[in-house]
Amino acid sequence: MGPGHRAWRWSLNGEVVSRPPYASMYWSPAQMLAHLTVNGAPTRTGDLFASGTISGPAKDQVGSLIERGEGFLEDGDEVVLRATAPGPDGTRIGFGECRGRIAKGTMQ
Image (cartoon, rainbow, N blue to C red; front, side, top):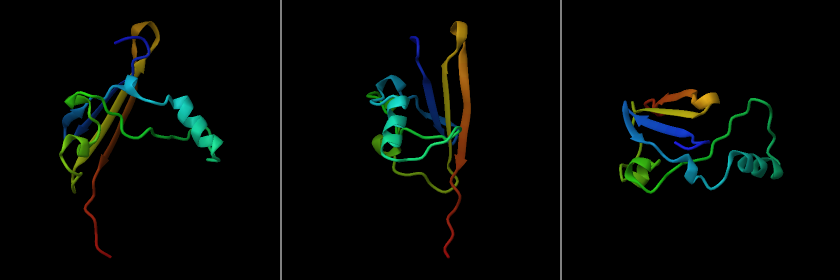
């Protein structure tokens, strides 16, 4: 891993589905934030924004189930996103994890 390398990993029901390469991102976070604010989106300290799907050319780098030919998430599926970035003196800083489970829909 080179300097500045961010490592992303997403899992579906406990199985790692993708390790997309952040280096292939078209826009940097600073550019995405500038795009949001120049078009009038209000932002405050602590706001979270996302880039959308990160994908690479290899099968284990594809970030979308549709791109993988696997369809859609189903009731009960659990998705976990984890990421790390370079820290001081060769260490890694973990961003923790973002975990969500698809709840069964209800008819109203």
